Length: 172
Length: 467
Image (cartoon, rainbow over all chains, first blue to last red; front, side, top):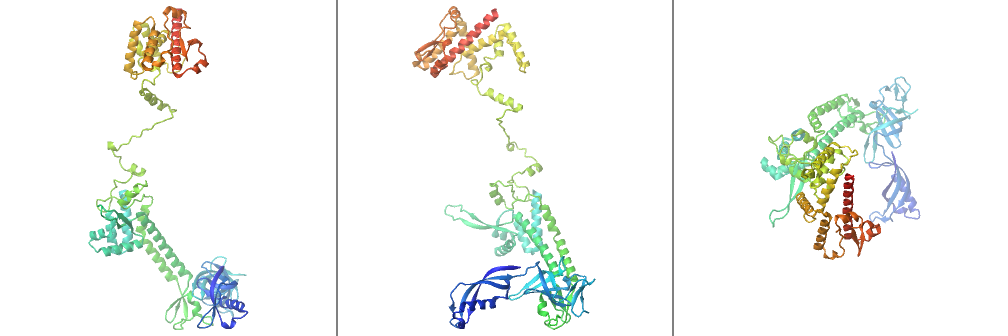
């Protein structure tokens, strides 16, 4: 699920950037430091929409770095249990397949794949094929899955998905 | 009510014995026996264990919401004594029922979540070291080739069939439900019951609030509490328990109905009116004026017969039918009533006896002054006015001093009423004159008019009888 949140961060700027382009450089640095990261509390920070410098820079005596307290708005993505997502299959193994929904990596085990789909080891591309052969899940296929559980670390979120429920599976 | 206490006590005991060690059960049993809020010191003395130990266990139970405590201020009995605060422990049956229900629901929910977890999250076992991994660990174990290896021994991982664990979970669930069966049955027994308050002192406090709470009274065997003497009798309890036959406890409900539309309530209301005194009665209901009484006293046989007839008529003619007026009876009534009215003494005429004596006196006076009965009346009024108000000498009501012959001749001109300083014949008084009268004058005028009308009627009736 996506959120638009206001977050704060202490931004450390190298003294060499203390010139006429200080704030543009600081903004760029904020983008590079924050975007694409993941926090256990908020989830994935997708992009920054606006930046406010709410304090004057403070020079650290020891290193000479300037610290700015920055408030920014960002689009956040955090997966929840039970949420249905569209994901792209990245890897298929005999134990299940991996898929990615943006920055989120999801594993769908064979137990949560419909029982009529079996791993096809004979194929050149590893895939799961239904009994009648009409449905096939292989790499780069788009699947609709439901998140069954998440493991959230400080810097990483991993999810377990299922395509066993109704209206889930390959999106044709 | 006794069974209610037994059910509740059994529930508490079951819960404590199911989920707590024996020492907890001992202390809760002691608390249940007390049936009131107690200090931990008192419990410790009863059980002969350390107070510290009792308090620790009670605090643990309080943490689980199985017992409750309250700080109660106790004022000193002696003048110099300070107000102290005591920590009293008690059991709240209603709270315990809620807590037990909530915890049972949480058990079920947790078991279900465990089951769902086992279904959703696949486990993997290392073929070498038999280490178990879950699906959440997959990213760490995934090799670049897309295979899974144990992070300890690099052994291959295979899917662990969850059927065993699922059956185990189901077995756990069935075990739990069988173990909780007794508690659930006991909880079902409490449904629909009026949950009483455990502590007697609490019940006394809450009795002022008018709630339907009852208290837990002392029990005979320690397990079966009797019904409390302080318990307010509820509707259901009243139907179940025998009625108290003590005459002191019987309440009479007196309903005063203001609306007399109901036929059944008419009679008592009339009865009450009779008791309110003779003054409020109309003249025809006075015992001395009663036609029946008069007929008994009368020597005239015809009149007596007529009265008897009228009595019969009164008794029989309940319906309102046109009644043929018996002239004799009517005359007798008028005569007697006039006598009664004439002998009326406002100072002592409040009882029937005085009324009857005055009636007798009037009769005697009439015998003596048979020639002019009205004169006596006017004299009496004059005397009364003189004795009470001497200023009214000049404004005296005009009297009739004519003889019977004159009376016959000047029937219409013999009565004068005073209006201010003028004397006007009674028959010539206009409405304007009535308005000009003072209160006393109007009263006198009314009296004279009444006498005049009565006399005229009497004369008319006499003449009609003669005719």
